[in-house]
Amino acid sequence: MRPFAMASSGSSKNLLLPVSDPPKGDESLFKGSGMSKKGAYAAISYMACAVLLIMFNKAALSSYSFPCANVITLFQIICSSALLYAMRRWKIISFTVGESRVLADNSPTLVPLKTLIQTSPLAITYLLYMLASMESVRGVNVPMYTTLRRTTVVFTMIVEYLLTRQKYSSSVVGSVVLIVLGAFIAGARDLSFDSYGYAIVFIANITTAIYLATIARLGKSSGLNSFGLMWCNGIICGPVLLFWTFFRGDLEMTMNFPHLYTAGFQAVMLLSCIMAFLLNYSIFLNTTLNSALTQTMCGNLKDFFTVGLGWLLFGGLPFDFLNVIGQLLGFLGSGLYAYCKLRGK
Image 1: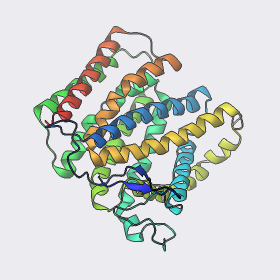
Image 2: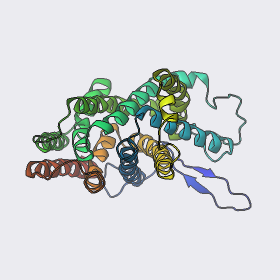
Image 3: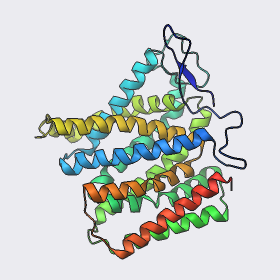
Image 4: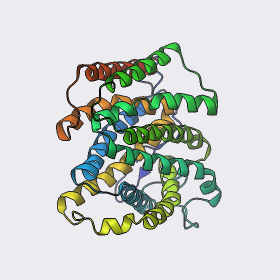
């Protein structure tokens, strides 16, 4: 992996920011490992960011009853694009692999038009993934949301097989079976069943699988690093989502939202935007350093903390023995996959 440096005036030391360049050298956790140290750090960072982002989004949509999930997504894209633009102009980061940060930027988009066109499928899948994921949080309580989202691994395996003919060992398939079985057992007696909410969650699972598989393909062929892929997503999706929210009247509804200027709601929105930026970065990093399936499994592993916090902060799911058994099976399957990955199986 070839990280680039953050220049520091008057100092010979550089602060390194990791990007998604292919890893070089022996960086394995231990002999025979299928995951590098940087890959492990990327996976842990993703899980931490994902838990916090779900909590902030749930707080905005449920605790404050904010009616416009699309507007939250728009704010997150605008915040992410603004941060990337500023860091690129200040030459803190680069957008392409091996790019010299001292070169002049002749293009107003900071990347070639050809690259933008090449990454447009990723931007489209990203927009669908963001919209479906945001809407799915609203209709389902946090514990059941995380339970249903664990079935994303099946969709990811199917999409990877269709795109790259990727096949998996019996150990990996067995871990996936445990996860899916646990998800169905956990949701067997959900008294708050909502057909619309459940349908949106499964749509979010499909779009997530397509998005991660697209990252895995374009992330290695476009010449862009993690920041470059995020930038292309932002400048393509931002105008589209802005038009859509204006057309639907979401922007007007947001301006009339009674809690818009309260300190608590603004703090939640700001933290949501910051965590969305960090989450997207860690998703790109984790998917390109590891794989789309590993990224999905990390999402399953972080659910342990999401379920616990969701129960404590938002409630919504009464204690049930089947639910506990299902959750434990899901975590066991995720742990089995992590073990197989670290052992290089």
